[in-house]
Image 1: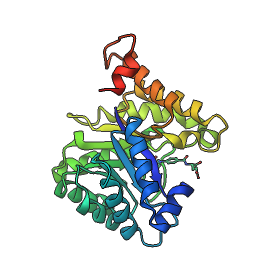
Image 2 (image 1 turned 90 degrees about the vertical axis):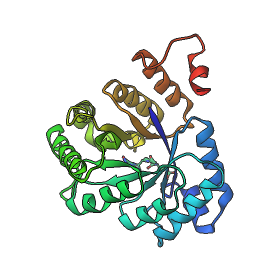
Image 3 (image 1 turned 30 degrees about the vertical axis):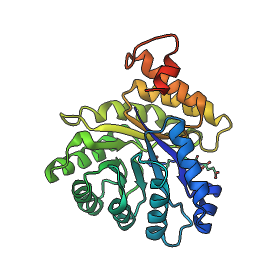
Image 4 (image 1 turned 120 degrees about the horizontal axis):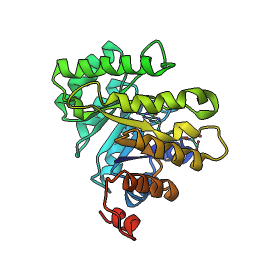
Length: 262
Ligand code: THG
């Protein structure tokens, strides 16, 4: 499982303040804490209140790269912000993300090829978020075929079914899980599946419990990567145990410690 830490996001007030004040220490501590907790990559998002996201994204990336060489997931809906980030990423970046809109794919797939980046493809288009599994799969297939046409390997593509909060979209949770399974049969070699996990629990009381229960289920449906809070220890223990139960690593009495030392 590719674990992408979600905490460097201007949606969080400490990050948005640090970004405005150019406080490197807050960002660097947050980056290192996530890496120590088990993140393989770090999501970087300037947040909704950034007035100059190109400059802010570059400052965040430079600041993070002073303390870690983990890959970064450049999280922006603006291709200009993504390219500004790609230009300065030292490790192999993740583009987060393209939609299935033609103009977005025509810009971002060539950028992924040019910068040898992995690519997240959201099953969403200008018409909005799909309301069922078939619509998700149709948009996913559009993204996969555009990648293949343009020469981007599907196994470097992470399809995202768009996880919605359970308190507003309870009837869609099972469709989202099934989409993860069916993404894999769109092409051979298969594309991968990713989710923004914390979306599922937004506005709920038992956030951590909802997150980790959904994560265990999504892993059983074939999830390959997740944007999540790696500092939630129970969540990380659930992730490791789910993979153990699916025979993805070998059981020993100290399997949690063994995984963390990997
Ligand atoms: N897919 C992809 N990228 C994504 C998402 C996705 N990037 C952003 C987001 N979704 C994943 N990251 C987060 C980060 C934080 C929260 C949810 C998802 C979160 N934040 C608190 C909230 O909204 O309640 C904010 C708390 C605060 O303000 O302090 O839940 O789906 N590809």
